[in-house]
Length: 556
Image (tube, rainbow, N blue to C red; front, side, top):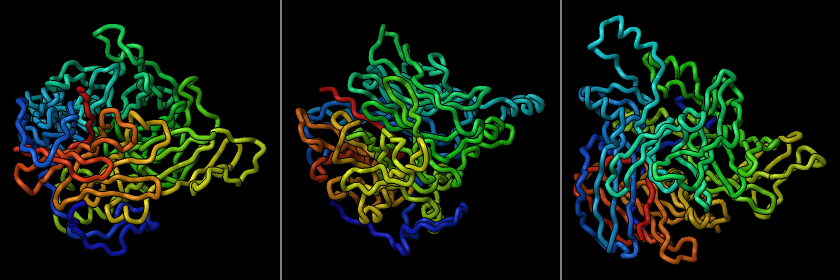
């Protein structure tokens, strides 16, 4: 455990009832400036040797892969939103207790087009491309009426399909990547295989390799949410998404204003889609270029709408007749989901407000002093919660009865009507998690525990706009262990099990720690997953921007 850089908190973590954009959820002061976390860097295609402190276990052999934005300006033009930066892929190669680092920009169409013209030519989530100055006035005017083209700037995560690695965002484009060299191999379009307009960057995988994802489709009948299934194996070496099918299509309640979602939950037999009241105004999005507004301007929080859990049988593709409701909330990342004694236990990181997306404008991340504190304090904190969904709702049970009969569970599932259940969560944390700003970027021992009962999860504490601590949560007693050091900002923790591990937390946690206020002192961090004590670190002699998601490619 480390030194704590305590900030002044008064009336901390208290939620008010006001629903305006200036609502304050916390009262934190003295946040350090993190401007350098969103500074453009050069790629490092040749492996760099790192400086080891402590001990990197010799049994770790493989590539720790990370993805995120790495270029925020093109020529004299700048991106507006953190999500817009050009994708920079990172590889930490670990072998025999040594670590090398390399990085490469994704060789995407938008990256090449932007650089070739030395300005932003392709619109992104929060940035509208300026019309080509070489066109005449009439051509520039007409270009405003073009529909927005989906970006292939896949800067969110590394994912796997049929054993291959891809980088992904939330459009219909992914890129296949060689994880050994970070070379961009080929661009893959979901819409060439199934009728979807995009897919999430957070698929789930069954033990046999079958992969599930979700993606929207937009038709004359309105918007649909689609559950996607990709087979585990290739029919030929050139295969990408061949054989992908839509398992189930769920109509959006509002045809032209579907919910935004970043991920979904999955158990052994069910997929759960969380229809949250973060809405996408499709009319605003398709007319964004005409109005000079980014896609982000078409996303809004509707606090008057409840959250709906849609449960789909993975084997039949049938949507449960029972609709499960919860109060308005937002969720970007689920922790785990499993079935037990007729109940579906769903754990996820949740917030009572859904306006955080537009807080991550580049201008906000570069603020300092009171202006930075103000951005943070108007963002609702995210905490881990558990919902318990009864899979069978007997018609004979009277309305108003709590269907959650699990012992020692404070979550409720009240039968509101026939095939209608209203769920209230149980907190998966104690009061001490407030001190660390809640928890996001959750991870588990996925190979052992995904879709099964489990005890531990890991994540980042958020006492800043980005993660500034690493946290291990023990669900037996809801106790936490914390790694935190002043002015250090760790990435999403990835769990890697020890060879032959039997116990759930027998392994290590991998993270990349960024130090924006110290020159060239970023390091790769290894923690003992049991004790949460530092085992070793590998210092990288260059600056690295803060990224989004990653994975570990085991080469043992």
